[in-house]
Image (cartoon, rainbow, N blue to C red; front, side, top):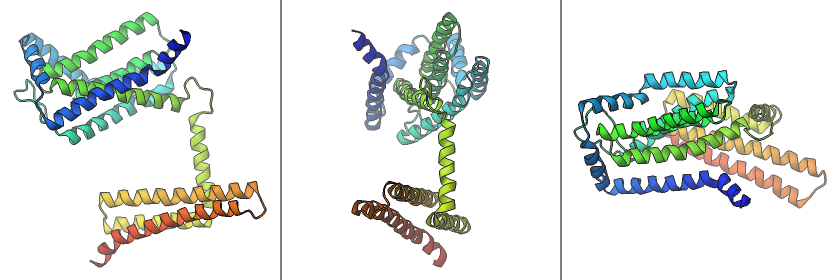
Length: 330
């Protein structure tokens, strides 16, 4: 029985993630094939029965909880609580979380390009699916609930405040349907995406902050990586050549005004070639450390790693010629 409880405790997040993924996928597929869903009309017609001036004013206020001014104040409150409770490690994630969820919503809206409902009670612009207010409220205020349960604070206050925040998130979703700026499916899909996002994001937070794990701080990993970059550049001639080539490409790219897509191709190729050169250096040094005698397997390891760099370099050269020759001669 204890084993079952342990398994459930360790894996419930992934069950939730799977369930939310199914919800989002179902709605995403349906609105792609048929933007008008029967459940959207049914839910809105039910809510419309309760419309009144007072209720409209209330839901306008609730909807504005996701306005930039309210979000800015909430950010300051979250960070202040983290500082007071000496949980400084959470401060950067408050802002990072907000930026990521806004970008994710922007991408999804432009993938599905679903028009907003007609006869909206307030002015809204942009696409409808998924609801930005639903996504931001669940991700932003949901992270606050997560932080509350990871700082030292009175448990009764923690539970009451978490319940009030969750209630507020639900009311934000309802407000978007009531004000007829979103469909029911927009809101549910928005909540589903944000729950998936929060599970992944909080997992990322645990890894970065080493929460519950006695490991070296994450900054040391960055320190070792940066040290490796300088060591490779200092000791390896080929790495210097690749960096010089990258510098020439950047200069010519700027002068010839290559497009955004062409810059992306160049950057990916920079990373690929230079990364492989560092891997090749690592393999060569490891082989030399293991044996000083001639061994066919050592030769294969060194030659194939060098071949990987060669193929990547040739591919980068060809791509560079395709990009730059037309701009130079035509």
